[in-house]
Image 1 (cartoon, rainbow, N blue to C red):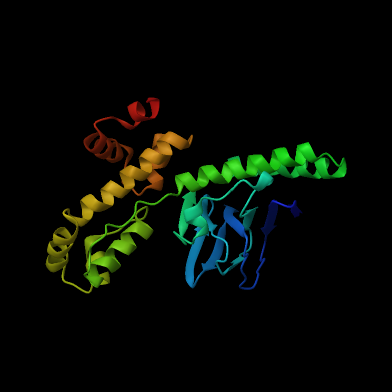
Image 2: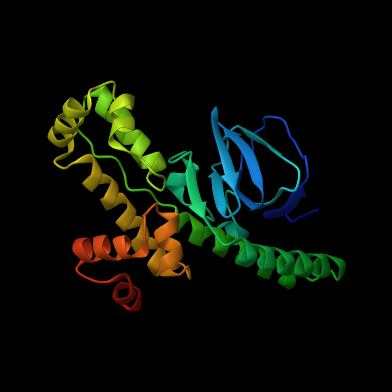
Length: 264
C-alpha cells in the first residue's frame, strides 16, 4: 500500500516483505514497526526494531530490511526540502548526524494518523484538490519534525582521547534505553571493572551509572515536554526498573517530580 506526492511518500508493508540495500539521495525516511519485528540494517548496523521502536534514516543512508510473518511496518518519507522551498528536515540531520536516531512511538497513534493521511491524499488526488494534498504534506512534515526533536541525542563530551572510553561512551549513547551493566561496559573498553570505573571517572568527571542516568533523565524531559506518553510508559521505555525508581532519579536530578515538570 503506497501513496506519494512530490514531497512525501506513505507506505505500509507486511508479512515476509524483503528489500535490497538502497539509498534515497534527497529523502528522509522514518521506519515505524506497528506489529512484530522489523529486521533493519542501516550503514552495516543491524537492528531488531519492535512495535513502537522507530528508526530515522538521513538522506543518502544505505539501508534495507525484512519482515517476518505477522509483522507490519509503516514508512514515511519526506523530501529534503518541503513546499515553497522551505527546509523540512533539520540541517544537522541532513548532514548525516546521528545515523542511528531511534525513537519510540505509539503504534495505535501512527496507525490512526496513517489511515487519515492515506484517505485524505487519495481523495485529494482523485479530486485534483491541491490544498487537501498540501495539508497532508504539512501534517506529515510536522509529525516527523516532532520526532526529530524527540530523537535529539545528548552529544558525547569532547576532549576525550582514550579510545577504550570512547567505545564505551558510544555504546552508552546508542543503548542508554536498554539494560546496561558495568561488566558489559568494562568488556567493551577492554578493561577490568575497577580500571574502567576509574578511567571513566577521570575522563568524564562522573561514574558510568550517573552518566547513564543523566542521559535517561534528559530524554525523559524531552518526552514529558513533547509526547503524551504516560510517566509509567516513559519509565519502562527508558530502562528504569520501576516507576518509583524513575520518580526518585528525576526528582534528585531536576528538583521536580515528573508530574510537576510536565505541568510546567
